[in-house]
Image 1 (cartoon, helix red, strand yellow):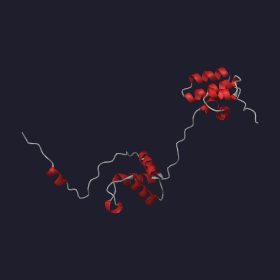
Image 2 (cartoon, rainbow, N blue to C red; image 1 turned 180 degrees about the vertical axis):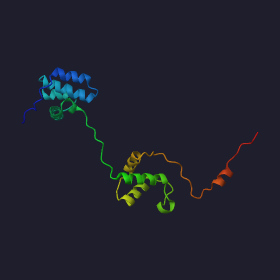
Image 3 (cartoon, rainbow, N blue to C red; image 1 turned 135 degrees about the horizontal axis):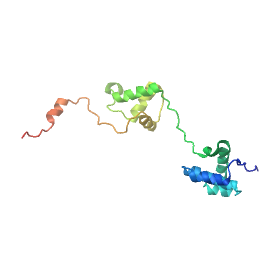
Image 4 (cartoon, rainbow, N blue to C red; image 1 turned 30 degrees about the vertical axis):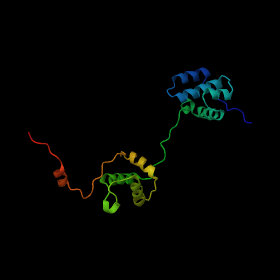
Length: 169
């Protein structure tokens, strides 16, 4: 069985506790308190329980602390996967959405996710899941709320004649 990983020696238990008290993130504070317990000679299992983790996780944090210091104890969030459409393709898709569908060419009177999924596959050769099209639309600045579609044969003059008007007094 391998021995415990040595903790770097440039921080005392008191210094680690002081850093924990000033930490803005609760997770960082818990990790610093666990490392302070290790520095004081508490068993690794007990020190891990202080921070609400298991021994293996504490070992991973010791490695990060040894390499990067207290800044290594912060959570490192990633931005997610890279968009498979280029910036030009995204701009073209955005313009296509803003223009609305052509009933003869696209066969629909308003865009739905399934329709946009098909258009993206046909135009750009990129296949997305229907749910991811929503993510893509949000990234492009579109809302899930859409205007009520208009029938292509709708005549504005007939609509104006149908509207009720109030009497002039």
